[in-house]
Length: 232
Image (cartoon, rainbow, N blue to C red; front, side):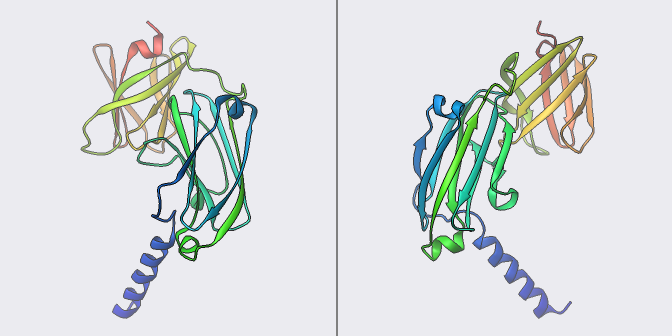
């Protein structure tokens, strides 16, 4: 590949990155969705104009199901879903589409950002939209316990307090959902009182220190007390 061809490729990639995602414009207008409406299935309509994004906030308990869908008149309109304040989104619409269904990894407020892509926002385009948000609906079982454990999501990253929720099945069987510092969720399955698998591609390795599970999944690290699994 010639130097000029490589430079053209790098410039094209940089432009594509620049035009992706929401525009860095005004602070989004914030709308709170009442819990009763979210439980029943809230249907919200609005209009986007340029970089005037709209952020919807909805409350969910750890383990509850969250379902979000977006219908818009402009194909450059998308929505992102994240735990409010988290560094990473649970769902990025421009990459994963206009529908999201997942389980809340932690109790708290979840932000749904509705926006126009940067290129459309800079052209001052508009879009009418309908956003549907449903939380709970009785489909998800509430966790048996919630709290915080030390965890780290990257190599060399110091451990910090991470929210967790656990569902216990008895006989040492349980599923622990941990919210990583990035805001992403990690599910760890215990069987016979030991961690055996997770929803990550990497294998689960662990050792015991007194009554504490020291777990590694790739570069991720977790410290889970045995009482979280047994309920003791």
